Length: 52
Image (cartoon, rainbow, N blue to C red; front, side, top):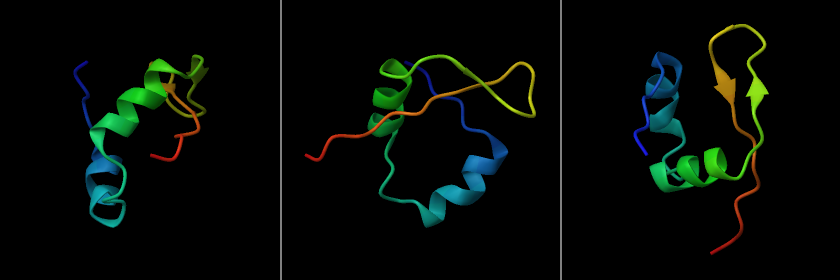
């Protein structure tokens, strides 16, 4: 899976170093399709990450 980071995520990533690309990929695969509130062509993913 190819993940394209938004400008918002690039700025926030330095504060959320515990969220890796593996976690993002897991959330996208295991989440339903959720439309973004502001961007018509964007989708969101929400998923619980199990402890490892």
